[in-house]
Amino acid sequence: MAGGERTRDKYVRDDSTFALAVLERKLVEYCADSGAAARGRFSFDSVPRISRAQEEETRARTRLETMDAVLTGSAISAPSASKSATATSEPGTPAAASAGFADVYEQQAQYVSKLNAIPELAAFGAQPLVSSQRAVDLTEAETEYVVRCVKHVYEAHIVFQFDVTNTIPEQVVEQVEVAMEPEDDISDVLQPVVVVPIPELRCDEPGTAYVAFERVDMDTFPSAAFACTLKFVVKECDPATGEPEEGDEGFEDEYSLEAVDLGAGDFMQASYLPDSHALWETLGADAECVETFALANFDSIAECVARVAELLGMCPLEGALTPKSKAAHQAVFTGKWM
Image (cartoon, rainbow, N blue to C red; front, side, top):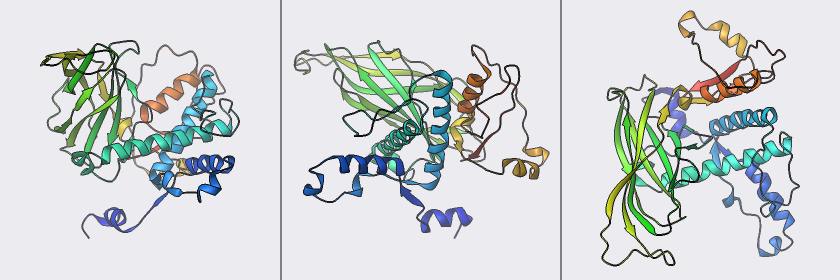
């Protein structure tokens, strides 16, 4: 079969597995519900199946977020009391990390479900090779239109997901889409192929728009910055019902968003390699790249290293995020180009 072992495995071997953190949480909820057994057996349909590679990537990136929370004192996402019978988890504890795994898996499953529901995007593959672990805010939280971006990398395509919320009670916006203009000419590596608009957005009812690009040069990992503009048709409406006023044809309007960056970290799958030093020694000089980063506004080396790991999209090895010196630190990260 053309394409070698990787292509054969893709079609022949089923490497999927249950998202274990989600399975654990669902089982706890089932056991805690005294009437669940009477209603029927535990159903695995509510537990998403993911690839081994996706599980590995999610665990690596969630491990980074766990360490980041310990360093900054911020909380890690955990299930609410209404969703779980387990006790509240303290930031940085194994229980909190497990809750973080479950939340990430469920989020990724939701992404895949929504992507596959759109025929133009489902044609790109069963699921993305890599998806953003964190949505990027493109507006302030209190603005008229709130927009967040998530990136999905397929084998030959890149999909930008824009979650949009209209916060104006007196308006309904229709034909909502995001126009993306690269700041530099990238036509030799990326070409726009699909724009999926939101038909209608009423106040405080979020919707999702998509923009997809095809990779022209598969040997290149494109890097670009995109100027983004939200475009839509505005119609006046009754705030009580949300229904547009009869006969109102609306008017076209647009709203400037923050730029969206596409970088090397978006094509990287965080992967743990236990013998990374030995592997590094087998690589020649051609595999080495030296870069200098201007890293400012960080209170500590630990915080700085955590942000570098996030920027590169790689897995921090043991000790990488816990520097012993306040002046200098050597950190090792591993990952796979997808």
